Length: 200
Image (tube, rainbow, N blue to C red; front, top):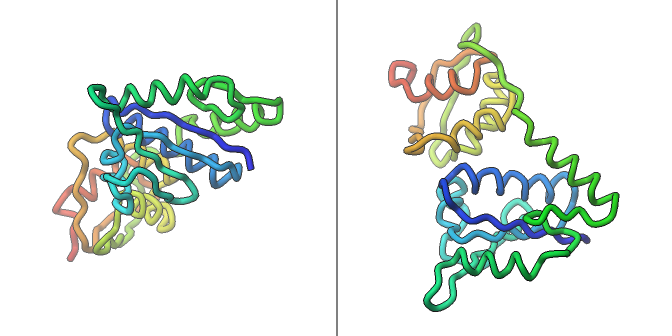
C-alpha cells in the first residue's frame, strides 16, 4: 500500500489542522492510502476529535496514523516538522512537497484536491420544522453528520468547516432543538446557539 505523509505546523489553530485532517481522512478512506499525519500540536486536533490523546506520539483514528512531531532539545516542535519534510522530499507520497509520483498517483492527488472546492450548502433559514437532538457525548463531527442525515444541512463539510472557523469554538448542549429543513450551515449553527430554539 502506498504511504502518504502529511505535515502540518499548527499556526491558526483549527483552520490548518482541520484542512490537514480532512485531506488525511479522504486519502485513507476514499483512496485507501496508508496515511501519516504529522502535527507539532496534537492537542488542537484533539479538541475537535476528543478520541485522540494529545500526549501520544502515535495513534490511529479513522484509518489515519496521527503522529506527534516532538521538538529536539533547544528547538520547538515545528523545527522537527521541517526536518522531517526535508528528509521526505522526493518521496512519491509526499503531500507537503506536492509530489504525486507516477501519473496515476498524480491523478489521484488531483481527485483529492477537487474535494476541497467549497462544500455543498443551502442558502437561507430553511423551511418546515425539524426537531433535532443533541445527545450527551456528541462532538462537532457527529453533529455535522447528524444534521445531514436529518435533512437540515446539505453536507457534512459545510457545517464542519464552519465550526473550524469559529473562535472560540462553539459549545453544544444536549437536548432537543427546533430547526428547519434545508438550512444553510450558518443558519443551522446560529439556531443551535440560540437558547430560544431549545425545546428540552
